[in-house]
Length: 498
Image 1 (cartoon, helix red, strand yellow):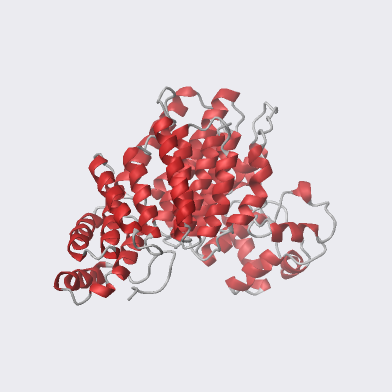
Image 2 (cartoon, helix red, strand yellow; image 1 turned 120 degrees about the vertical axis):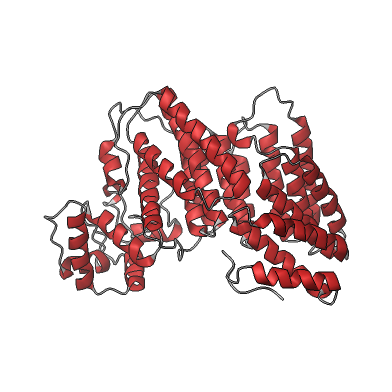
């Protein structure tokens, strides 16, 4: 008990619209359905949780998380409800509330807590999928808040867990769909690693919408596996699988407009990668969160995250990985109109890319970043800068053309982005005929993907067609775009720009 109100629970309680008595009855009913028929909660107990900060005993936090998840249609975890593990209960009055305000995610997590958060969050996400609910409504954490909470932790070495026994006492708090904690061997982990490659290839080709649930389900099982303490070499590989799946789950969630869910997965991925001793992977996971911020029009937040991603990746980060990180920072700078800084960062990316001799095999998660992707990101950065400096559109066209020439099969979504970058740059460069050609190539390919991000980019391009509305060809293009573009863009809100 904190002696003060649980403001997080109070806020969610207000959003849910229940009375205290109604919530007590729902808790008893849900607990019975989860195998705890002996639980008997009443109105006064609910009042103590909300008004006095009392933390109920297990399984009540999990029951409440399930009820709020279903009621609000988005993932709600026990920490979202303001419940923290008992080891911190002895803090002075008000200290916990102040900590929650400064660090709402309670970052960073201990290794056993990471597995628990991972399993609980994926379990709730799967529940939303099963019941046809939409995971939305939460707020994105600020990039500065994540950076402040995770900086020292990411720059330090992970603490070794020396307990040889299974961590089932921690895993049991994780919630639903938990894979029973049991030892697995190298063959099972190898199979999991191969499944990651299959999911990654599908995502690159078709977008994340169609396979997101499968990835989340696989990640949920891996979280349960992590609840058992394996030998160090196997445990590190298992953390690596968790990190890769969490990045994919985050990217796929971002692809379909579930932005707070995506950010949570990126944070989980960073934790999993660091616990597995892979700091470059942790940095790359945070760079995904930065890309998400730029896409959502928050480039200053992205720069905060990129500083942490680059500094926290460690000296072992390969030049090609560092080049990729530079392109993301350059995109954020372009969004802010910082042309000189953007050009400097892209120059650094090019130098790093060519300096990679290839004598060290790239990790699996970097194999998708090739020369085509380098040019694709440069095209995007220059196209973005062209909103501030129109002359940059010419350079954007050159990089987009080179990216399209280099694209290999199976990268359909990346091609669409290149088409859109090229078309947008052509509109800015006052070349509507060439813009129309590439815009229609993008449109032809759109039906083959399930990526909302492509619709968002296409919507930005539609805005650039406005000054060519009287042009015979562009007038027809605008009509076609108006027919096919959704009128509720993911992550942005509003209708088609004029």
